[in-house]
Structure formats: C-alpha cells, structure tokens
Length: 365
Image (cartoon, rainbow, N blue to C red; front, side, top):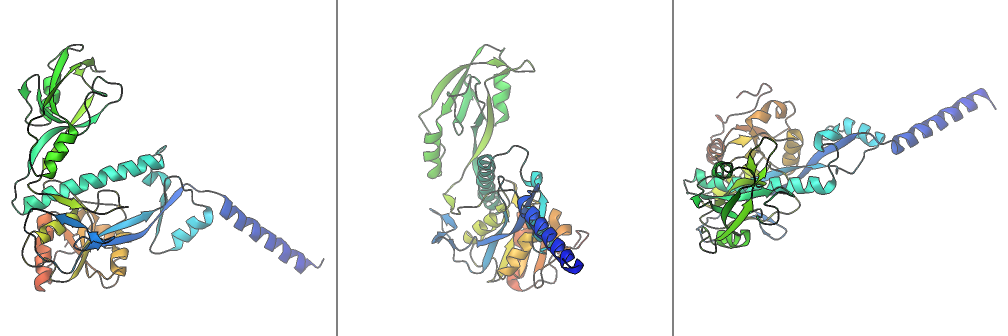
C-alpha cells in the first residue's frame, strides 16, 4: 500500500475514532440556552396569564415579558461533541453539571424545588405589587413544613393555620417556637389550628378563615440541642383582599417575580404602564419589593431581543455581567426595587428615556 494512502487511511480511522469517542464519552456539564418569553399582560395557552377578580382592572397594551432559560435536565449527560459545540455557540453556555444540580439531586427533586420557588415568587409578586399600590395585605401563621417521623408527622399538615399554642394567640411565626420551647421534652403542647383545606377555601374569597378551629395535642420531643420540639417549621401565608391568579405552566424558579408584580400593577392602575412599548425583564422579588439577581442573564437578554424587546429591566446585581454582551437594539435598565421599575416604565411610556438608569460593565449607571 502506498505510503500516502496508508497515511490517509490511518488519519481517517483516527478521525472516526475521535468522533465516536466524542459521541460516546459523557462529560460532567450541562447546557443553558435562551428559553421562551411570555407577556404577563397577555395570554398563554388561550387564557390570560394574570387573572384578577372582584377588583376593577384596566386595559393594557404593550409587553411586560418574563424571560426564561432552557437547561438540560438533571439526568441528561452531555457528550464531548455537544459540550464543544455549546462552548463555541455565542448564545449558549456550558457549565459544570453540579452548578445547576447539587450532587445526588433527582429529576423529581429538581422539578419540585423549581415548582416551589415559582409558587413562592408568585406570592411575593402579589404582595409587592399590592404594597406598591398601598393596598393592605393581611398575614397569618401557618405550618410551613412537617419533619418526617417527628411528633407532628400525620397530625399537623403544611398549610394548617396556627391560631394559638397552649391557648396563647400566635401573632407571628416566631411565636410558635418560643411557645413550644417553654416546655420540657416529653411534655404535651396544644395547638389550635384551622385545617389547610378550610384555610384555602377562605383565602379564595379574600378572607381570613373563621370557625372550624381544632385542638391538636402533641407530646414534645428532645432535639439535639436539648430543646423541646414537635417537628414543624412555621411560615407566613398572605391573605390577599381579592383573588389574583397566575396561569402559566411549564415554568419554574423564582426569577419571574418582578415581571409578575409589574403586570399586576399595570392591570390595577389606569393607563398603560409601558406606553405600548415592548419591555422584557427578569429578577426575583421579595414581599417588600426588593429585586434580586438571577442566573443566565445573558441568555435572557438574547431571548428577549429575539422576540422584539426594546428595553430590558435588569436587577442591579446582574448589571455588570449583562452589560458585557448586550444584544444590538436592546437597552438595559437597572432596577433595585419594584418602585425603580415602575418609575422607569413611566419614563419609557412618556418617551423620556434619556435619564433611565442603565447598566455598564462596572455595574454603574
């Protein structure tokens, strides 16, 4: 066999071997890419994203789009070729698998965590929006979670409203632990509760649950530090003065909180908050309206611009990263609170955009 032919054959076989290895060898990485973006002022799957009842609402125009990042699942393992392609793709990001999914986390656990964060973000968005509009929101102390195989397991349930402990009224979540730890381990403690299903029915009507209280007696148990416990974590539940529902499936995580809150504000106030402009954004939000940073900011700006966004509301702590690679035609607007976002939207609506706080590579306006 001529030397040239032998060399060519060897090179071809080596290339085939490398390609096969690239396809077959899994690598410990996951991929992030721009995901869907949904207008919180519009519809999704044929129904309004934000549904508000028993309160006057106003017509809206324009877009207030929440943005998402698409990620490979916790059980999916990329091969070497996919990882290399992802690294070379400008709009995608390849990151260590453990960055997205802690060691040992199953797909079901990841889905559950994302769903819980999404639900909590909706509750905080409602609270922050009504706070921005100076509409009072009542609260009540509830059973947040129950520890398996502890005294409360099977007796108390997540969502049960805690009215009193040993006859002493519970005014805030911290009262529960204080009242329980007054006991010595082994002593009995009496909870006055309203079952979760009754509380949920009342909440749909915008009311505090009344009547139907039950007394549950539990024997306390000794914790590792010697305190008396029953095995629950107390939490806070909000009672909104009118029903507000978010209808959006197949989305998880907390990062849509800001855009949900702004959509609620827009629907509950006369006029158009956007002035008909296409505004997208992201950011977690807490009950007090503080906007927090999120992951995948660069992919969210790409996804927003691809759909036509002109402005992108950016958490101030994400500004430096987002400003390193701004999609052409998209303007980043820095926000730290829901109040900042509302003021920015009012300027955008009026066409007064010269003084909008913007993101710079150093995170300064």
